[in-house]
Amino acid sequence: MEVHHHPDLEHKKKRFKEYFLEFLMIFLAVTMGFIAENVREGISDRNKEREYIESMIQDLKTDTAQVNEKRVDLLVQMFQMDTLETLLRPDVNKRDSDVFECYHIRSSIMNQHQVGFSDRTITQLVSSGNMRLINKKTVSDRITEYYSRVKVVDAQRSYYVEYFHKCLAIFPDLYTFDSYHTKLDASGNAISPDFVFGKLRIVTTNPEALDRFKSTIEITKGIAGSYRAQIGDLKKLGDSLINFLDKEYDLTNK
Image 1: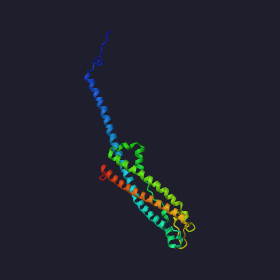
Image 2 (image 1 turned 180 degrees about the vertical axis):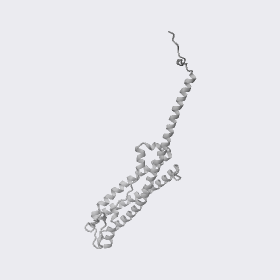
Image 3 (image 1 turned 90 degrees about the horizontal axis):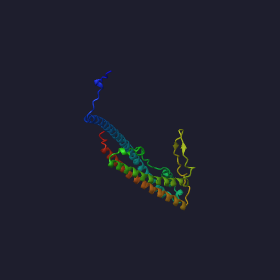
């Protein structure tokens, strides 16, 4: 029996040029896919970067607004502490008006005024490894500078809080609680007591004790002043960083 080969089953050997063209087409397809994926990732990264910057600017604005308020509070506190130091004399109880003023400015050693800086965005950037998205060195340097300064100011804040608690510890030695009794309203909110002029007194009038009290108040006042100056400098740095980021990312024309 004769065997006939069907012409369609005949395989012609490809030339090198055909192999090369097939390889080139596959290579180009893979390369273009790779480039397209990189472009998509690049666009996504730039969008994420912009979102982080916008979020950071909101943090900075919150910080600067808070600093404005606390700087006023700290200044009032320092003036009140200064007045309290002047009034705490061994014969203070002989002058009803002086004692009344001591009670009136009691908040100077009752209330602390610290700034809690917003670290939401910078924490997300660092913990997620997304600081790499900030591809401009000038931008990352300015951001690093600001948040490094925040750490320095927070150290001073801790010092302020420490000495504030020392002031708070002497509170019972200055103010008598039978005269100073805070009441609560029906909703549980504290109501400042009504002080009766002429019936108030400073508990401890021993000269040595008063000197210790005034020394603690004076040191706290100095620390508060330094803290106030530092948050003021940080506010300037924050305002500058906001303006810088606005320009770098053209956010004002968004």
